[in-house]
Structure formats: C-alpha cells, structure tokens
Length: 197
Ligand code: SF4
Image 1 (cartoon, rainbow, N blue to C red):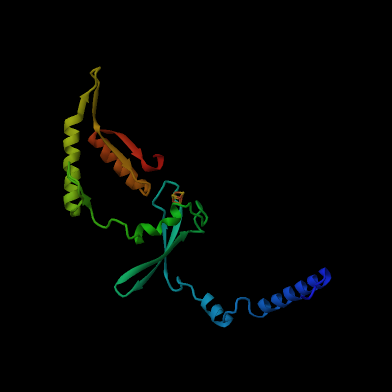
Image 2 (tube, rainbow, N blue to C red):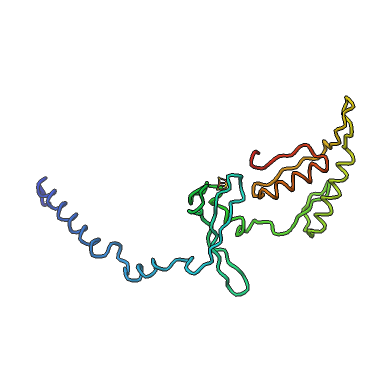
C-alpha cells in the first residue's frame, strides 16, 4: 500500500477543496439559473387587490393587508400580512395575528351557526334567524328571572345579575358604544371586553 506523508495529505486536501469551490462559482446548485431568475420575478400576489384591515384578535388593533384575486365568480384570499403603514404595528404581527389568514381559509372553520340543545350531545346546523331568536328568548328569560329592582337597602338598582356580556376585540368604537348602551338599558352590569380577558 502506498504511504502518504502528512505534507502530501494536506496538499491533496487543499487541491480537492479548491476544485469543489470552483464548481459552485460556475453553477451553485446545478440548477437552470435563467429559469430560477424568471420565477423569482413572479410573485403570487402580482396583480392582487390590496385591502387594508385590522387584526380581529385583540384590542392592540394591528393593521393588516389582505391580498385578494377574483377567480371566476369567487374571490380568492392569497395572503394576509402586517401593514407597514400602520402606526400601531409598523408591519409586524404577533404569532396570533400572523395566523389571521386561517380565520378565512382553515378547513376547520365553522361556516354555519351550530346549536346544541340543552342536554343534547350533538351540534345541529341552524339558520341565523333561529339563533338570533334563541339568543333573544334566552336573554329575556334570564333577565326576567334575575331582575333586581331594589337592593337590600331599598335603593332602586334595576339590574340583572343573571346576564353577562363580553365585547369583541374587533369592535369599532361605535360598536362598543352601542353594545354598552344596549346592555346597560337591559340592566346588565357584568360588562367586559375580550381585550382584557
Ligand atoms: S393579536 Fe397580535 S397581531 Fe392581532 S392585534 Fe393583537 S397584538 Fe396585533
């Protein structure tokens, strides 16, 4: 067997490394660079409509940009990202907001109202009319059953302690104002906001 000295071994190693380094300079990964460059210039949001919106998850109210494209009779949501022009988040989103697109595109998204009757074990699809009537009936029943006109000291309080209301973080100021007015007019005193939960 041929003996290789330490010096010869190092020379061979250096020559091999130089040879390997020359190949990437010519064509880094052996790809067709012209095709790759052409592809890099094509963005999937090219020509998409840019719609400015607000993250629905919390009261920080980070600005979003949604990119949509009309395809036939449907509008396709292509991308949601932070709005760099928003003074609140300057283009950034927290991990929760960064998943906002899944609100619209997740296969697990509930698309119709689901109702589970008292004591029931299964969810049933119902219409919005059914659900709104059911909420109104339950609200009235709970209010009637728990309405307190006077407290223990004889003070007129006109409140219900059997109903609570939690506003959504995506409420605008006007919606929040309206919701608080409606709830207070019903005598609801337990009023919260999702942003504080
Ligand atoms: S959930 Fe995150 S991204 Fe959305 S508004 Fe709140 S902080 Fe911003």
